[in-house]
Length: 152
Image (cartoon, rainbow, N blue to C red; front, side, top):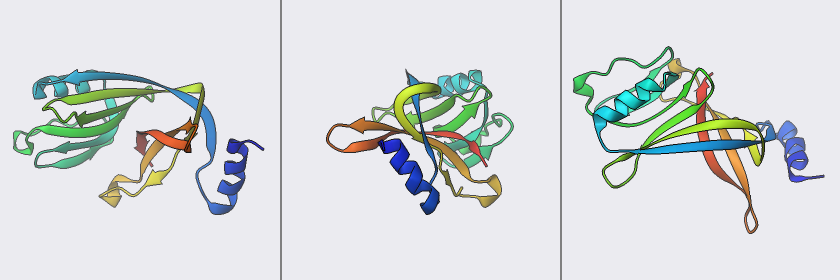
């Protein structure tokens, strides 16, 4: 029995998310200008996700909301577009941001599961993620990436 089969046999009895094999294509851009960040995210047409501004946190279910000046600068976000590409914006620690797009691939050598988590506001629905696990020769399977894939 391989690792995937062993995990899935335990997952059934322990109510854990099933795993499957797959891959991931990652594309990252470095950005410096806050206005450029909002423009780039808008061009990617996210359909749902969450946004963290300096003075506001919000979720969206039907495309990006219009930002308000009182919210301040966008600090972070996770979203998904209509094609299922996950988007993540995070600060890079040097005064800029990384905008990363994660495209799921059906074939690959990673293990994948899709857990759900409680949202800050239960009215938003549960947060759904796709986690990618990579095999490490010393540690076994370790989580490499977690991508937001929508609300449940």
